[in-house]
Length: 265
Length: 261
Image 1 (spheres, rainbow over the protein chains, first blue to last red):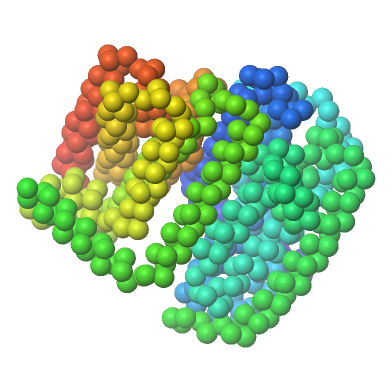
Image 2 (cartoon, rainbow over the protein chains, first blue to last red):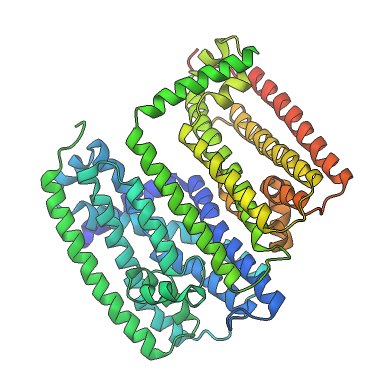
């Protein structure tokens, strides 16, 4: 099994490496909006001292940490797989004796992450020099405590992303559904603003939704801003969502493959 | 006159193509409305924590949202689809057929595809601008409104010119097919007034990829922050940008040798 993973790693790494120019563009694309929001909140915080108890530095550390956490927890399954279901080329993958999503797509996701990370680190260092965050609240314990959160965040977003992609077995095209899902994720994950600044209704809902594990909870854990009880409670909720996402994915995959008619193949 | 007739014909063709996917159009409009709600929510979150953003009130921010939507529409309805077609036509040589037609090649390459349902954005953008201007109080004199409209036009012209330069670059560097991604990447920075950004980012969105010229500047005119001389300057820059861009396009045309022949 390990050999299989190794093999898939080599193939996917080589595949992603081919697109390194695109990768830089992607990185730029995805970097702009956190920097924009960061600038907006710094401006407000500076003009009135603080926003809802958050100082300018709190925003800087939040969004700069977000860049890293977001990269770690995000998932690109829909871009790798949706077109394969759409045009029927998934048939080839189905013939192999390994799960196409849980092995090939997963490894591809990780290869993509590894590669973008190599490009992200120098850019991140430049941003740190430009924005000069004060990271003194971070300790190695807090980073360690956040690791399970990051892993859970990736697990949930990978499984939910795969579930949505598998809806293509029924609808053929899933880009509209995924756009809707993406909007929900941006709203409830804390991607746009740290959750405490949101209206109360959204905050209350976000607590019980899977999205906060993708950004907000790991970020705030790294920054040492959540009490331990809150972290543990959120982890418990995250774990429950991980199980739900797993069951959902299992169900959609099993029913979907049965329906799969390999359009055009 | 001739050009107008060609434009009308292109419009008709694109309309017919989009009518083939009616359900898709409906879904797209619904998603578009969802994002509008999303953006308004974002704005209300910002303004529930402050009364002004870098001196701008909520009315002005709504008007800015409208102008941003116009630029975004330009991007989604013309720039993306035509760039895609152009890149393909360079690679497989079908640009030859475009060049054979008795119409200006630059016009034909930049207007032959239109995403028709995006015209909907025009309605939303106008509504946002009208509401925003009304909310921002009585500051808008007819003269300011006029310069606002004028500068919205020049901003769009500058973006259009930059786009021409970007796709013309493909004549020299064939493997340059994510030419407009950088434009799209920085587009998000147009959602907020440029004076929010740190100096380096402000420089980029003003001089390198002048998104701010198309979004912040018209609003500055509406707020009465621009002198007559500055307005004239933007007008001149946009005309110059277009002239330079079409020169570059012509030079590129000379360089082009066709992929199929």
